[in-house]
Amino acid sequence: MLGSPVSHSLSPVLHTAAYAALGLTWWRYEPIECDEAGLPGLLDRCGPDWAGLSLTMPLKRTVLPLLDRIEPLVTEVGGANTVVFAAAQRLGYNTDVPGMVRALAEHGVEAGRAASGSGSAGPALILGGGATACAALAALRDLGERSAAVAVRDPARARGLLAAADRLGVAVTLRPLESSSLTGARLIISTVPAGAADFAAQIFAQLVPVPSLVFDVVYHPWPTALAAAARKAGAAVVGGFDLLLYQAALQVELMTGRPAPVDEMRQAGLAELTRRAGAPAR
Image (cartoon, one colour):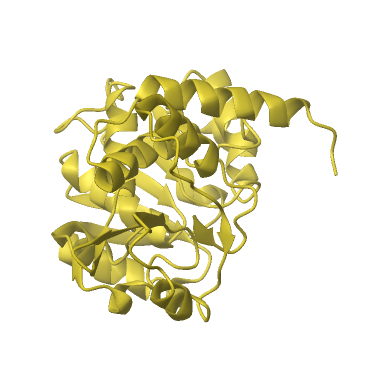
């Protein structure tokens, strides 16, 4: 698992549980602190005993020119969160998008119906404009959306997102990342870090109509202020743990060639989150 920072990641728990359930007792999955400058050298040091890598920020876009082949979805989204080493090549994949689609499907959001029972013609709204927001756009596209609103702090830094939207065929309207951006949204996907969407929580109950579903990609601490406010107002809530679990399951399948033991991964992840919730602050 590569990224910066990365020590907090739950991914090692999920992957290690998968390897144990699959009987791959000699496999290891570890967090490695790696920034953009260190990525080329680290990739060069990955020999034949390496099966693959998971990538988090800020590496999902940086890795692209360092890969030999990428799946079409990576090109569309503009980012890869998975590298698989095969036949002396580096292959790039994006499991965030199908992970989001599966997480949403489990909460009643199906293709052609982006917000079950919303009763509102308002847009789907994404908070944030980074790599995860691009993945959210692709997930919405796969669910039948052809347009979305995106709330960003600095429109000048949204060029990557707008380029991804163009490749995906999704029309995007930029909004400021503030309370007024939530007006009329029927579905909200928050891709910003923990605490950055607290402004939305403060006014959530005042929204008319109330969005029918909120997907917050943060998984710890949980619930976030936004998730708690949404649940209190009667909205369906999807948490970041679901996304993390399903994208990790797809990574396991890509790296091992075997079906992922999702139940065992879920149990291990939830147990670790419970442990962290009870651990004393450092």
